[in-house]
Each structure stands twice: as C-alpha cells, then as structure tokens.
Image 1: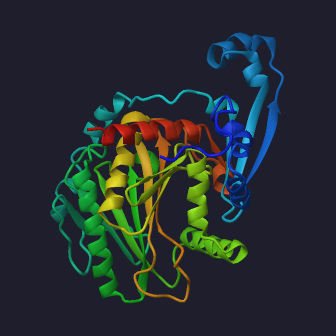
Image 2: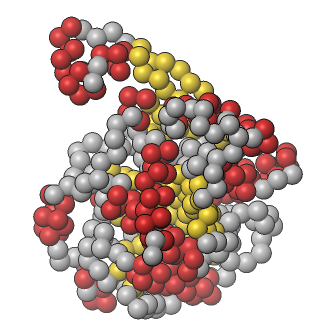
Length: 375
C-alpha cells in the first residue's frame, strides 16, 4: 500500500471526524483532487441532560460531555450527491468481532428449504438451468425484471462460502448473462446481487446470489454513476474513478490488490461499506470479493450483507461506458436477529447516517489482506 503523501503524522487521530485535517496533510494536487470530488461539512450537536440520566449516560458513553457535545461530519460526493453523516458519539465505538450465538439455532429452524433440492422445488428459466461446480441456477419465482435468475449455492449455511464457491458463482453468472441475452437480444444491461440473510432482504437463508438483465437503459443508480463520471470527465478532463481511488489511497483508505482496487468508502451507504473497481468480471475480482467478504464476516462482525456488481452493457450502446470499471459495493446490514431496521427515513429520503469510521474499517481490512499475503 502506498504511504500517505504530504505532511504525514501531523494529525493525532486518523478518523473521518478529522477528515479536513487529514486532507490538509496531502500533497497540493491530491488536495485539489479531493475538493473536486468531495465536500466536507462539520457541525456540533448539543443537548441538555436531566440529572436523572447522568449515571446511565456515563455508564454507556463514558461521560456526559461525550453526549452533550457531539461532533458530526457530513461527506458529500459532489457528482453523485451520495452523502453520509458520521457522528462522533457513534463512530468512536469499537468495532466488535462477534456473531450472535442464536444465529445457528435460528438457521437450523428454517431447514429444510426449497434450495436444498432445487431441481424439485425451484422453477427454471425458459432457456434451462446452468450448472457450475458448486452452484445451480433457477428462475426467480417473483421477478424483479423480465430476466431474473437465482444462483443457488450447494452450501446451505450462507456464511460458509469459500473462494472456490465465490469464483464458481461468478462464472455461472457470466454464463447466465450470455444465455439470457441470447434469449432476448434487447436485454443488455447485467446486474449481479448477493443478499445474505434476512436483514439484507433475502427471504431464504440458504446461500444464494441473483442475476438480472434489463432493457432500454441500465438500472437507475448504475446509470446515475455513469453520468456522474461523464460529467466529471467533461469538467476536469480526468477519469472520475481514477481520481476517486487516488483520493482514498492518499488517505490510507484504498489499496490495489493485483488488478482490483479496494476502498473503504468515504460516502458509505451504510455500515462498513467497501467499494471495489476492477477491469473485468473475472477471477481476479472473484478472489478480491472473497477476501473482502471473509474479512467482513470473520473480523468485522458482519453477519448479514448486501453485495452488488455493477457491470457495463453486454454490447455497444449510445451511452459512453469507456471510463466505467466493473464496480462492486458491499455493505453490512447488521444483526439478522435485531428487531430494529438499519434503514429509516434519513437513509431512504435524505442521507446515510453511519456509525462505523471508514478509517477503522480500512485498518482491519488491510490486516486481513496482509495476513492473507503472508507466507
């Protein structure tokens, strides 16, 4: 990983809460690049505590001062308008590494499921099933789109995936896109999805991913990202994704692993979001996805997650996709057994509110990658 350039070592704490100071330590060109991409706003949330609450607050938050004066930082991507609010009171909490002990029992209650015998209990696409070494496709019975399939893992436990299974699922997805496009030549925009456990929206706990292929225009959020990159190119004459990676790398939030760029996002949709850029939907990306997911599950307390792969169209289009890499986004969805949702009105209609500091996430992620690379 590249060391942070500029006046390193001046900021006592590497945290998103001190992002303006960290940016000020970068080289002038990198500072300018950051300002082209992001806007940072900081504010202070203040409140008055009744005396009756002091003991409870000190027990759970350390001091009354920690609650009565809360530093909040908002980071906004100027081009996509993705925005995330980081709260000092939440961001400074340690990242735990535990999985709810009740989860195994809960999974056991749900077995068996239709994915255990998919050829008997799931429909198939009109163009048939595709078989991998450890996965099998089915047609989604309640479709998102005209072409919408499921890739069923041989392993029931959704967290027991290994590298071979991930690579096989991506291989089968690629074959499904080709077969689905052949059945409908107007469907050209592919999407790969992996929802793990109930908090992610998965209705069946058995390990599986999903694939879809749409017509006319790519899915809205993918197209918004492409248009943002196109506008950035027109404004600055530079590649948006290259600059996005450059800024994250300069801050210590990104690393290139072989051909894949891995980043702890400065504007996460929700907790611990990681973003990957790759030149193709191939084995190198599959290995990086596996490493990232295992780190999230094994070291960052992630049990339920959403992962998506944004892919360019299968054929040439009138839109310009030349700047756009294959993009992976993966985000923690919290404890599957929790009663409260991690998404509220703020996340749905305003901006994301996030507890996990991307600098802490990155530190853990790089330890995982260094351990993987060690002889």
